[in-house]
Image 1 (cartoon, one colour):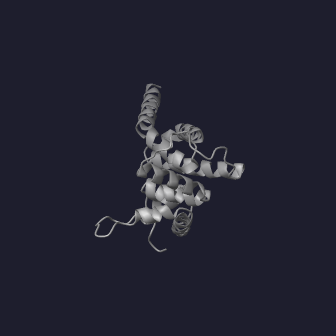
Image 2 (spheres, one colour):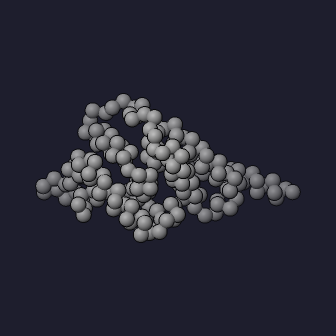
Image 3 (tube, rainbow, N blue to C red):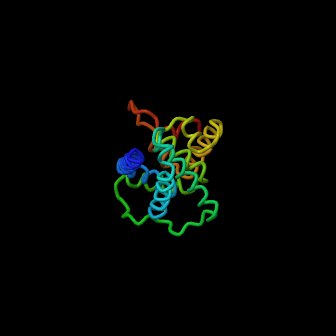
Length: 185
C-alpha cells in the first residue's frame, strides 16, 4: 500500500510540474487556434483535465503532444457545433500603433478567416514548429493532408492579407530568409 501512495504522490507531483512548466505555451497555442482568450482558457482547462485522467499512461511519452492534440480536436469540435459564429470581431487588447502590432493584428484577422483545419495546421507547423509528420499525428490526419491544408492555407492568407506577403519579402540587398508566405504564389 505504501508503494501505491508513493506512486500516486509522484504522479501528482509530475503532473503539477508539467502543468506549471507548459501551461503558458499551451495557452498561447490555444489562443492562436480559437482566437478568443476565454475560450482558449476553457479549452486548455478541459485538455489538462483529460491529461490528468490519463497521466499515468501518458507521462512517459510526450504529454505536451497529447495536450496539443486534445486542444486542436476540441477546438474543431467546438467550431463544428458553433458553425463558426463569432461573438466579437475585435480582441479586448489595445490596438498597437507600431508596425509589428499592425502586422500581428492583420495576421490574427487573416487566421480568423481560415477554416479550422487549415488554421490548426498553420499554428502547429509555424508557431509550434512541428514537422509535417508530428503535425499529422497531432491532428490525426495523413502527412499529405497536412501538406495540402498548409498549401491551401498559405494561398488563402496571401489572398486575404496581401500586406503579409509584401512585409515578408526581404528588402533589396538583404540577406534575410523568406517567411514562406511568398513561396509558390
